[in-house]
Image 1 (cartoon, helix red, strand yellow):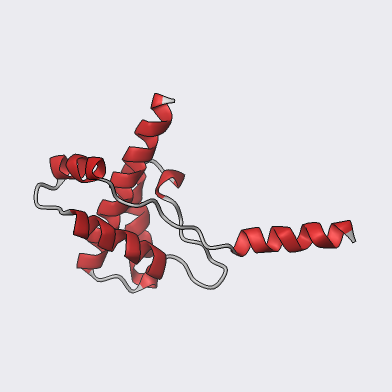
Image 2 (spheres, rainbow, N blue to C red; image 1 turned 90 degrees about the vertical axis):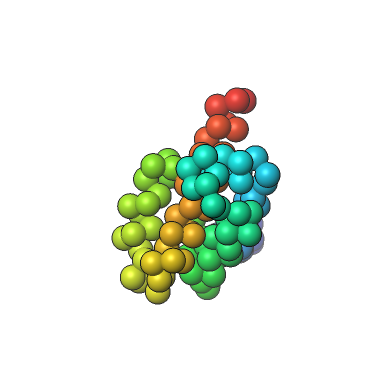
Length: 111
């Protein structure tokens, strides 16, 4: 009985939706040092793309912290065709992932 309960909990956790981190004003400020025209709305659009294009039924979207910021452009390019990304949506998604990966790395270094 205990093993069955553990299996059920494990399955629910594995399939639970993961929510990518929200965009903060600090994130926007950093992103503007790299892409001067970027807005908070652009980064939030990237966040929504991550949820809709990179996650499906029991396939959780990756979190920005799962790869170094410099690795995201290559990873996004590799997945763009499979995910049905246009060049514009690929760029927006990449900007979100690079910005938030950098923010999470900086936060963990400060701890």
